[in-house]
Length: 218
Image (cartoon, rainbow, N blue to C red; front, side, top):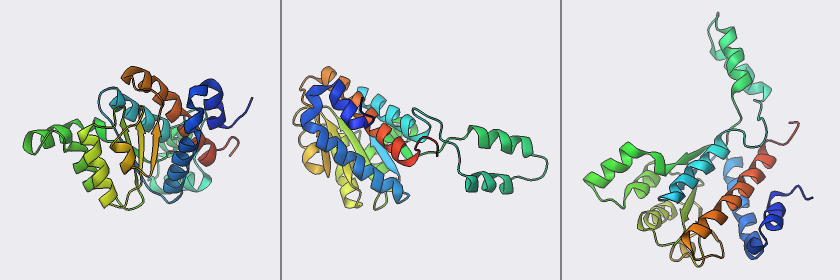
């Protein structure tokens, strides 16, 4: 059995074979961003908001393996602590996982409700992209229809910030797909079925990133 996560994805879900190249391209965009010390911002509504949170959880801590801290980071923790805190330093260094910096825009409830109340209900994601985003960061935008207005507006804000956009949608996924550098449009028009296919897609991408940045035995 292959160890490549995208090949495994296609083995398990043959219907995704036509978009395997898009999944690989999204993995490449994310690898470039993380190699450059950038941050990935993820957003979506409803079930896609749950997926956005799930993606961040897979990136920010160990997914399928431990991600032990490099020796230099262990030394930095030790040197930052005052005398007498050696046990706390040891506790931290043994339990902190290597992380790929990612933020779920859908979970910022205070800010989202403030923007909705004071400005407009469809502006919350765009405001966060404008405030947080820097050139080279990535927006990972999820919308099964491709028409979610708050997600589309966030994509426009990201493009203005010189942030690559990855769109994860259902069949067609317009207009969101047309605004993205990489669009992964799973071949399904039904919302529930599309979301069921989104999960193995982003698991494969997150696994590929873990393999790249936290290889076994590193």
